[in-house]
Image 1 (cartoon, chains in turn red, cyan):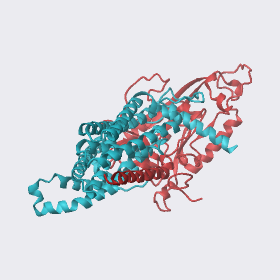
Image 2: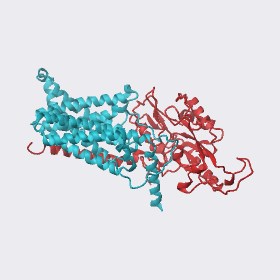
Image 3: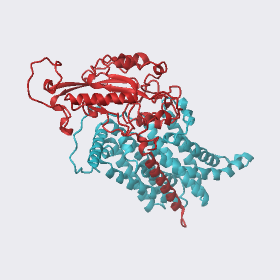
Image 4: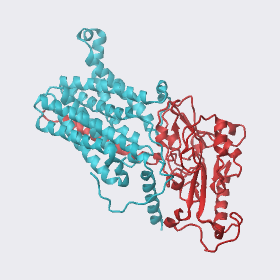
Length: 305
Length: 315
């Protein structure tokens, strides 16, 4: 099938962007939220390495999440959800832990199976820029500030960005934003500077549980598939991958996740689609409207008066 | 204008009720640009038509209107940037995947034509007698025609600019938005001609205004019907009030054009109503977009419905 630059599966975004055959493998993140402990080392490491300014020292009342969301000044955001058992996503899709109804005498965490499950759980996830195969931000940038690197990631060039803000509205995940006092758009670079020196990104380096895994994307996808199967075999039926599928609306993400509930519980869109998918249709409708305007103008002058 | 939903509202889950998307960082300047750009395009077309059909007064006011509004457009666009001094970076690339890039080049093609035609009308008679003045006057017609030729693009690309985002209220309205904007451009251009030109030359302006108003209202109603839950962003709150007033003023202006077009006073009042209605439409659409990014329901519910529909299809 012919690779489409705008939509659909695309094996090699870097080649599609013009890099020659010798470019490095595509790299990305696999964030396995089932082992995230919510330590926020990723947030701190990212801010320290990239010298990202603070985004306010607030108490948001969202469990341990006082960061709130990804933004120009937050490139890794750890989400915390405290879930009572009845709030789990079992009703809608029938997936969920199997309750055997037998009380155990073991300490919490000693066992693995569903019978050790309590009526409460934590969901913790480190969110990041997805570095989409078809990136809405990159597609709409009118200055060329946003570009595809040889690693397949998406980076903003800060000496070119003029702060038009189109990328902010182009992102279907709500990741990139404009920095208020600075005027330009900022987001995760996947530590482009570290990649050049053969190092892994700061957040992956700092993560103590290997929740954030960095490497070639193909390898990460294989690892993720095995991990999901393993969790299903252990009775964690609600484990699922998010952003792994090249057939999804953005062509698959460079940074994908293993989630333990529906995406919207974590603040992620259930079915994101790159706006460029409908570009052809949009321009066609605009062309029809433009023709209608010409017809209006011509008929306004037709006739005696 | 509220539609009754036949299906009970779906429950949806979110992360503490927080938005999924980022709000557009564009401010009212961009809504003002949508109006000024459309007005300029509509006026440029009226001006070219008036030039070709010997209507000097209509030609003059339309060309001047196109000039002033395109200058205002550039001011609004540049001032909304985070780094206005870097506005020329837009000219670094020509990217078909970016409507803003395409718009930059469209405006670059349109601007000089509208500018030259407008400046030619502004020349005082002593300047017009000089060689430079005669040359500029001779260039005014082709410049005006060039502007009129690119004007339909200027009037319609802004709809693609808004739709080509993740903003639900803009993206899902992409079939109708170009017609709403083009109708509004025609209505505002016609309104300006009705306001400033004498009644015996303003016939085409009146017709343009009425046609534009009809297209705009029909497209607007169609959009509301086709949008599903996202229609609420247009039919509630501030966006709803802006659009209601826009429709009232635009319809009033069109009625004035049809019934009272021979009266200078009625013409002028109708022209003002049409201009105000066009501006309020753009602000209303803008506000609806912002509202649709604030509430996660506009993202989660339609996407969940789409996923459910895909599952049904694949079974």
